[in-house]
Length: 178
Image 1 (cartoon, rainbow, N blue to C red):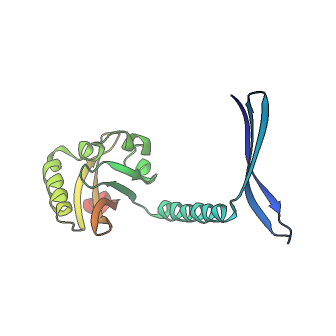
Image 2 (tube, rainbow, N blue to C red; image 1 turned 120 degrees about the vertical axis):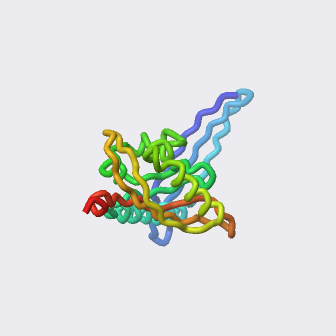
Image 3 (cartoon, one colour; image 1 turned 90 degrees about the vertical axis):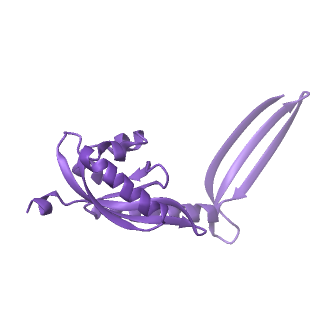
């Protein structure tokens, strides 16, 4: 059995003059020396409109996040592994977002060694109790300088079950020095 197929999205004008988005599929099936052509169209106008709403909402959120002078992040509630980290990480900590997301232990590995245990214990305790929290600790940047971070953390819930953490890390090194 041999198949030839073609798919595309297009815009068409319906009989009353409205523009609609369609998904067009053309399939030729060669079976036992008989050719069959299957043509399918699907009106995807509403799906495309929903996709545009989502796309523009994401752009607004990205724009808002980029105006904050802090590292906006999201992580796993059990491992503290980052699933999202904003681009401000490059300015404040000198790591790329890719570097931060590449290691499951990035956060704990880069807390200043003398602050690691107390910070990890504090965060774990509050997380296990589903409490939002605010902590301060030292963090080692890519070029090995020390910055002081304030980490403001919220618990993410889905159907009353804690599923993740999100927050913002603010560099307050200059304020602390003053």
